[in-house]
Length: 77
Image (cartoon, rainbow, N blue to C red; front, side, top):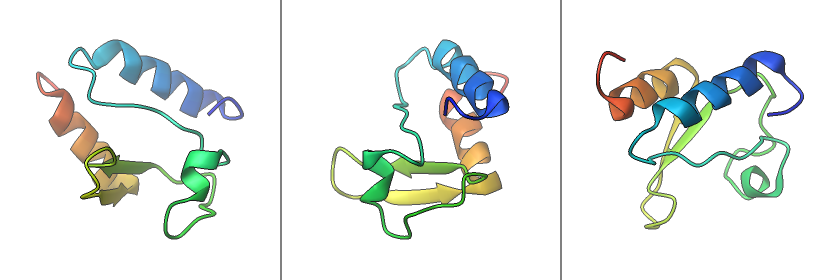
């Protein structure tokens, strides 16, 4: 998200840390997020969507999303 410095830095960190290419990124104000159930989301929300490309989606929000991201990154995370 280009509007929040913390969000922007976090995304840049995750792009670098995601060696296996698990993640794709979209701003909550964008077209991709507008099609999700529960949209529009508050801008202080972290949303992780798994299975977006396969059609069997699971949505993780806030801290659970962060923990799931760490688990998917593997290693010391």
